[in-house]
Image (tube, rainbow, N blue to C red; front, side, top):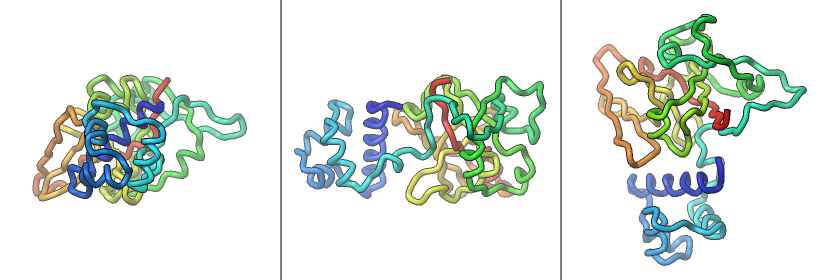
Length: 235
């Protein structure tokens, strides 16, 4: 994660607010003290904002950097020498979706993660997942990453909390990022639920929103594999 990525995260968040009808480009320009054309060019990726301009936009919309990041991003899996660690298995998408326990034969690689960072996560487990191994990880392939760039890059490792299968927001006023069952595939998306359908939202505007209708006997928890609680982007 670098300043260019943060720039894009802010732009995407502002575009989402405009699409939801809670903000307009002209209002944003007025709040931040820019010409409307300047803001329009920024929102449409025709020009970037200076650091001062980014600060003005953040202040105008009362956005902090941590609000732009729905998951904890880290560049390496390094932990302090006095911090106990927990071994998280990196597994296939199918194992993450379907295996309550992770056999040694299913482990592709392992990741040492701060035990404190894992224990700090709050759980909202479905009855199905309550006794599953809680934390597993997947390595994102190009297809999974493309819809979520720059938040998720190809080869990044996403740690999943399989004891969080609720649509209740993990943090107030922030979207929650989930690993979701989509047919036979596992996708990483923001998720809403409306009129009996799961709405799977990508981060990139180049990808369409997916609608997943639920059968009468199904619930959203049947599809939510777990919350993405950590992303390691350079392993």
